[in-house]
Image (tube, rainbow, N blue to C red; front, side, top):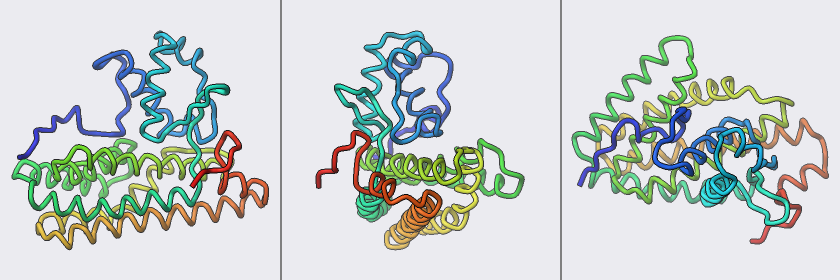
Length: 268
């Protein structure tokens, strides 16, 4: 059965509005997630509870609830003694996450073919046409969000909310890893430049995915999604190599590739 996804609910990367949506903790979670995914806080950086509570004019308990949710999504780590830190992912962990994303490609394709209705396919078509129009003119910041909306619509067409959550969490974790690498490779983080690069690089994959979805051929959809996932992992590996070259530090390499922000070796 096709679910009805209203436009305000679409968009896993929208800038939060100035008004409270459902609850204060929802409001805080949206703001903190937006900042993490835009590099305002990067991996290993502490999120100061008191300052955030004052800025958002809400209680520290509400901030605490929001950070617990972000921890559940793999965006932050909570240390009872030291506080809340944006999570640091190792390259090995990112490769593991990519394996999970690969497994989800086949499941998404299978569910989409079985469950997608006319409204799902029309939404994908409409968003793809909007993305194509955006590609034909100079890049605007909203174009990156539009590209994400298109990808999101494809995954949502599988009509499996848990699958969507897992797939999107994998994307979030990959993004904060790449933002960390970009910040420490270049010494600064220009998020709009990064988003423009991601939007441009995704053009070929978006078209291949669109053609596959419109064919409703399960193997073609899975293959198109897999190629996009492989491309993303390849870019992450290249970014990590650039990071190592830029830092030229055995100590830093060891910290980033083998340890968490707390300094404890990762448990496997």
